[in-house]
Image (cartoon, rainbow, N blue to C red; front, side, top):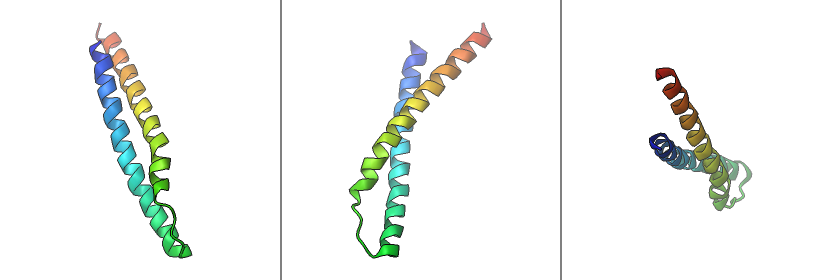
Length: 77
């Protein structure tokens, strides 16, 4: 049960970090697009696109930590 909660915590943190990094990257991309085309894009698009990326990052962080914890526990016994 301890591995599950550790994996859930790491998954949550990795989801938040992934969300923040993807929002920052997409804001830069939209600002470059604005400078190139002289049209103001909708900046809410960065949040809309970053949300699924954050969910995927959280799921991957959770699964990878859970699998690695299971493998390390099997090796130590």
